[in-house]
Image 1 (cartoon, one colour):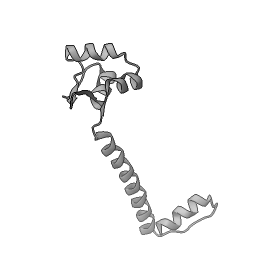
Image 2: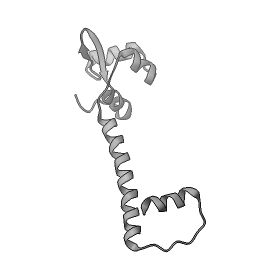
Image 3: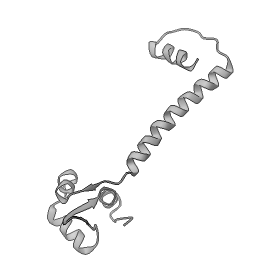
Length: 105
């Protein structure tokens, strides 16, 4: 039944509908579960850690490479070594830009 209600809404039909309360509850549950699933995907994707090169950080966030080097030297925003190349945690870069200090290491 929820798919039928959704089709009426999508089609923009201007109709009066008589509906059982159980069907209305099922439709509400359907909408809520769809939104919860979409929000869960956003949270999961947001929590997945990614790593950026100094150049990527510089270009994406408009931060000079020498500033990144200085922040790393002072321990303000530390790098991670991957096979001889430096990477920054994207979450740490965002934390610096949002609050002024790295929150987690």
